[in-house]
View 1 (spheres, rainbow, N blue to C red):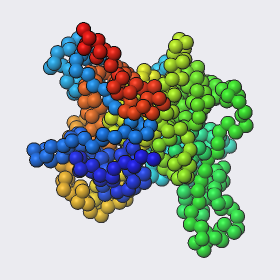
View 2 (view 1 turned 180 degrees about the horizontal axis):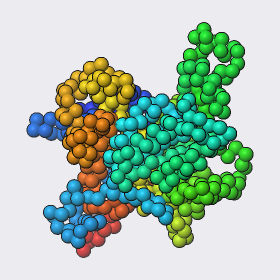
View 3 (view 1 turned 60 degrees about the vertical axis):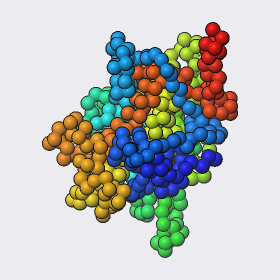
Length: 545
């Protein structure tokens, strides 16, 4: 396993724990006082694109060794002439500047869904941390104009929801999540709601179509990159564990057993894990999976859903091919392919460390399999790539890896960090909001106080958000949403700069020719050519002309 550096002196960032390739700590805490690159970017935005202490320093790259096969072992191509994808007919030097790079994208089969930048959130489901910070996540995503995903089991774990004979009568937590996003939705982005086995049994699809109609995209879930079983949460209340048992969930250990209750009473057992069920357990072949899958899609269309997506995990090649083929034939709107190396709210740790196909390998094969269908003249579903992304160079590489099929890059934990951080700051500066927004700090830590003491000076994106919503509305915008805007602005500017260097001024122009492999092993596994082989033939023609 590659050991990523914990500190970056050029940016002035440091990881509290062991960093992953995404730049995030493997264990990301909501109360963290800083300051990894994503954490600091959520406050200072574009400032983090450049080395610190300008005028007093020079800086040089430390990233000269690329070992093993990972997204880090891809490098981004640059060109010294030309320009492609300008929305105007002019290709002058004054027009071809990075702020003019268009990042807007769209996905979908028959109904197109727009996004202002090629990002979406990961699925934020029944984990308590998703519940606590949802207002920041949803409002931030709506303001930025990107899709946000409501994950599985939200209705099932909500004590206030009412389910009678498989039909939802009341679902306040799910309503809150959807309504919060729609409050600031301006036509770009989307609210996507996942369904697993329990959600299907509980009638989530029927509830959504009856109440929200085509305002919601419904998502079928096969899996995710962090685990190979159903979703989990942990609860520390025996009463709540018993409630979840009545909702039909698997609870470990079983809270109905007298010996378990006694162990809990005496402190030997302190928590219970709630698990979801595996899907398709009664099926034995790809043909049977296809039949069941198509039946589900047909039903969802029959009850009124115009937009349907699929989320698949880091299974092997057979499952990958099935997801691409079946989603394409069903004319789904999006297929999110989540590789191992991504994150989770709660998954068995060693399962997350050892199961599944790493993102770069899974995504490389996804492109290969999609190309097989495209070469036959068949429709190919739009892709979103997920699995351990956090920085603008990784976004570029993931888009390039899957082009022309990849329309979005899914950011999970990295889009949650600004929500935590902004809430912690708001809890200090507006103590009357602390409990409501789940602030974890009693005072600003030095990592924040040295930047400023008011939101207007702490968040680089504060006035951009104010311009969008108006001065009066700013009092209703959580600081976590402002932090999400600020991070998204940094990622957007960084992506624009990388694209301008590749002479691509529109997302649609990014291609696999814009990346190359930094070692021969990566070349072998991804079919992305090695650095010095790219355009070598053209170079020799120039020399021999």
